[in-house]
Length: 362
Image (cartoon, rainbow, N blue to C red; front, side, top):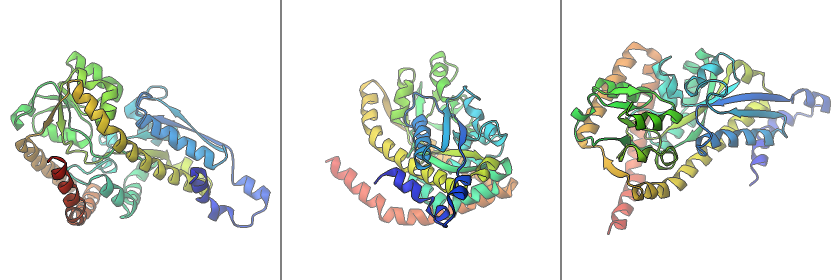
C-alpha cells in the first residue's frame, strides 16, 4: 500500500467538512521546520529514521510541510537537541529522552525502563496503555515539548570492553561510556560513567579516555568501528531491553499546525518507528557474524554482575520514586504493566522461542 495514501488518510476527518477551497487553503499554510538530530549521518538506521519521517510528512502534505534535518553540531551539539527544542531554537529534534535525565530523571522512561520492558511491550505501553500520553502530560509539557517514538532499536547489547568482566569487583573504577540512569547504577557500583555522543565514542576508546562503551547493537556498533579498540562484546544490555528514540516537537509550534497535519506528523512517526525496528531485526544478525569474524569476542555478563546490577537498579528506582511523585507514578504504571505482560510472554513467545533455539542447536 502507498504510504502517502495511508498518511493522507489521517487528514480526511479535517478535510471532509465541505469547506470551500479558500477555507481549505487557509488551513494548509506552507511550513518549514528544522529538526536537529543527536545521531550522525553515517548511522543510516538512526539518522535515516529522521529523513524517512521527514519524507513521509512532505509527501502526505504535497510538499507544504517540509522538515529539514540537521546533523549534530550543525545547529547544536548532539546532547543538547531536546533542550534546543524546548527553548524554540528549533521546532523539532530526534534524540533519546534519556539524554535529558540531568533535567529530570523521569525522562528515562521515554526511552526505556531499566530491567523493564522489551520492544513490543514498550510500544504497547506507550501506544495502548496511555504511556506516551502520560509522559506528555506529566513530564514533557512542563518543558515546552511534546514527544512521540520515532524508532525502536530492539534489545541492545551490553557494550565493548577492553578487559573481561568476571565479577562486580571488575566494575569498580571502570570508565564506561553509558547514558541515562544506567550510568547512575554503574556509578553506585563503583564505575565512572561518561555520557559521550556517538561521534566521540571511538576516539575516546582509542585514546584510553574510557575503558568501555555501549552504543546500540551489532549493525550500528560495526559502523562506529568499536570492535577495533575494545574486543570484548558483552550481552545482554539489561538497561535497554529496548531503546525508543524520540521525536520532540516544540509545544507552541505543534499547536500552530492544522489538526490534519498534527495527525500526519504522529502517523508518520509511528510508521517510521515500525520500519526502524524491522530494519534492525533484518541487519543485526549478519552484522554480528561480521563482527565475530573480525575478532569480536562475545561474552555474557556473569550472573553475579547481573544480580548486582538488578538489585542496585531496584534500590535506585525506589529512591527516585520516593523523591518525585511523577517518577513514582510512571514507574509504578510501567512496572504493573510489566507484570501482566510477562505472564503472557512466558506462555507464548518465551516457550516458542526457547523450543526453536533448542532445536536449532541439535
